[in-house]
Image (cartoon, rainbow, N blue to C red):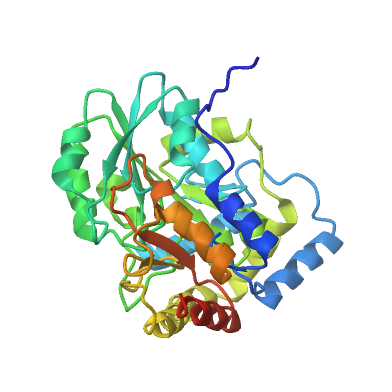
Length: 382
C-alpha cells in the first residue's frame, strides 16, 4: 500500500458542499465563485486571441504585456516600482503561486506560522516541502492578530509567516500598523512572508487595502500573491500572479517551471488587453461588491442570524447561535443545505483546533441580486 504524503487530507469542504447543493437543488452560497458573467470585452478578447492563433506556450514568467500591466497597476495603487521582468511572475492560479513560494522557502524541519482560521492550501504545501505548520489563532470576534501569541510562536525553526488580507473566511483586514508590528517582530530574524492578497480589490466602506507591496521593509522578504480570477470574475481561468524581489522571484521560478511551466496563453493576452483598455474595472470593484454585501446583509437583518458586515472579500460570516446552538457548524451547514436550500461553509474547517463554542457559517455574496434575494428569503425563515 502506498503511504500517503498527506494522510489527513480528503475531499475539500468546498467540493463537498457544492456537490450537496447540486444534489438537493440548493442555492450555492458556499464555494467562492460568482454566478454572473465576467465583462463582455474580456470574454471577447479571449475569442479574438484564440482565433488569432495565440495558442502555444507563453513565456515561463508570463506574457510581457501582462506583466507590464501588473507592474503599472502596482505603481498606481501602491506606489511601488517593480520590474516586470524580474519581479512579476504569472502563474496558473494563486494556489500554485503559494505552493511554489512555499517550496522555494521551506526545508525539512522548518516551521511556518499560519493564523487560524486560514485557507486550506497553506498547510499541505508546507507539509509536502518537509516543514511543519504552527497554528496561531486570531482573536475573536474581530479576527485580529494576537501579537503576544504570535511572538511566542516564533522559534529557531520559524522560516515563514503567512498573511491573508482581506481575510478568508472572516473578511477582516490587516492595517498598516499591523504590517509595521510584523516587520519589527521579524526584523533581525531569517523569516519570510507569503502575503495572500487575492481579494485586494474587495475592500469596503472607503478603507484602503494595506498591501505588503506598499511596505518597503516587509516587501524585501515577501512573496505577494494575487488573483485575476477574483478580480475579473473568472475563477475558472485559474490565472494569478506573484510579485517578489528579484532574488526571491528567481527561486520561485525554479519551482514554477517544473510544476506548470506557464499559464494559459490566450487568457494572458485577453487579460493584458482588458487591463490596458478598462482600468475603471478595478476602481469600480469595491462599490460593486459592497452593494451586494449591503443588499444581502439588509435582507438578513430580519433573520435570527447575527453578523457584522464583512470589511473585505465577498464572504459574509453569520452566527447561528440563536437558531441551532445544538449543532456544530458542519452539521449546521448541511442542515441549511438540505432543509432550507441554502449552502454555506462551516468556519471550523479553517482551523486546526476550532473554538469549542464556534457557531459561524460563511456565505458567499458574489451572486446575482435575485440569487441573494432568494437565499435571504429562505434564511429569514430558518
